[in-house]
Image 1: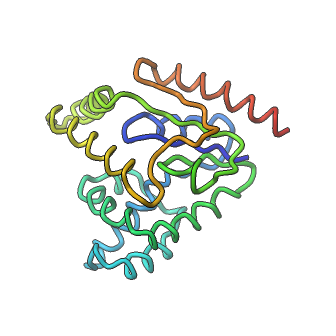
Image 2 (image 1 turned 120 degrees about the vertical axis):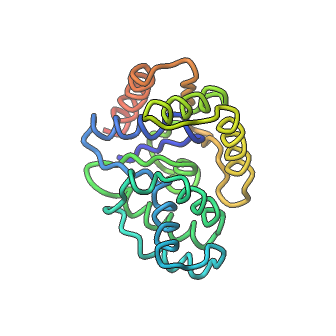
Length: 210
């Protein structure tokens, strides 16, 4: 059983995916962390971020079991990851690893930008989680301030819009809902409400595949 969850940055898909995996006892993979782990490995080794062959070689060495969200969430790693994530060879290498992960028993929840369209197009349950750019920027702002950091809402809003343009405009695996994905707009929805809606979608999918 594969549950594919896609959506733009700060839409809440990661939180939702972790909650779903816990609820059903499935394995969870935040595929964005695989790009960040590749970028961190390049940075740690002092290797260039613009050499596709080197980046691909590093991507093939990433251990999906050793992804540390706290470490990989750093801003500079995210910036580096955005540079290698547009490289087709890197994407191919990581998609292979993500597909292998998706076959784990008893089931998996994968979240990212291209799970339902590229990584697992045959997943029986696909959910596209979205929210307005304004709401997503406000969530990110609140998260930073809530942990004692300082943030500029206008700058975050511009960053969210830039990431959307980059994710949706790239030629290789652009961000878009799969044709058979269930759309879940969380703009005016709590995490609990979004979880309950996702759960009803998943339960229907489970019963169809029983």
